[in-house]
Image: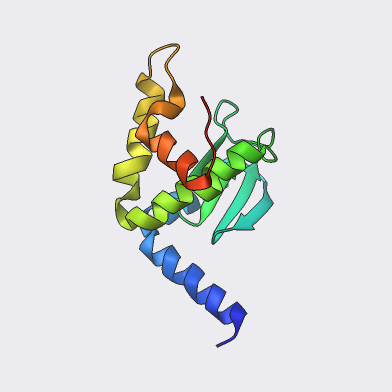
Length: 135
């Protein structure tokens, strides 16, 4: 089996394993405006969208990561999403949205002013996977 076929097969298998988050990604794509590919790695396609929320640096959903155009070339944000959250997505598969995604959003909503965003496990784990640490 050729290398290209192997990569395509792995991408497809991961797409199915991460199906809930991939379906969410496909559902939100039309609302992000014109998408531009930023990078592709770890079987994840990084896209920047003009209508991506300005306050959000990025979000990872299965085989896709979305960025605001201003953070699309920020190495920390790219690594946090594409080398970090994507690992959790591959580990938890169909449970990712329950174990990471929803709790991460709730953490953002209810975090106390002056709180440390990266101290919560949903944000600390991706940094550990990506080999980055932010205080």
